[in-house]
Image (cartoon, rainbow, N blue to C red; front, top):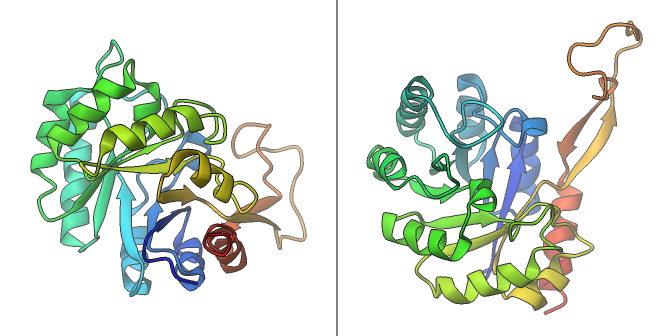
Length: 252
């Protein structure tokens, strides 16, 4: 399986998923907490442990203080700067963030300021891109700012629906900045997405559901929203990472 012309990134929700990503052949992980919110900054302990166990796969950390929108208060920005500094101290390989203005444009000033704290790190602009007003203008702005890549679903709920825009973005990028296709990528559609877009970087979770080992749980009490299944959890599995990569590479 020759993957040298592609990059595969796993959205990892914990250290266990990081290990599965590495064993499955992923080039890097994006380590996130708060997956139901679209990903938030993981804990210090999670980052430390992930850095210890990843010796082949690069470690990128999402810098996002909360779920919701991508316009941030002064206090939130200060926390983002601190988290970036911590990531540098812990020798991670990259960080992932994105800031928009209130009217849905790239916040040039704020992103530039955060980038100044990222020297020596690879930097991805995350799916805040899918909420921006003008994706073509935004791509050029992010390339000028110096971001290494953009994670996007083509401004649609899933990558499969966003392939027309992804193809346009891939053409426009023209090696100035890398496009990562992410959101809903799996072993059943990755080759189709590639043939329709030409994108060579993919972001996916490759998770499976596992039942809780607890033998007793008070079913009348919820730790979070009632719609969340608290009797199971999801982890990236080595098998699904391998299957998804193979579904592209073996069909070329």
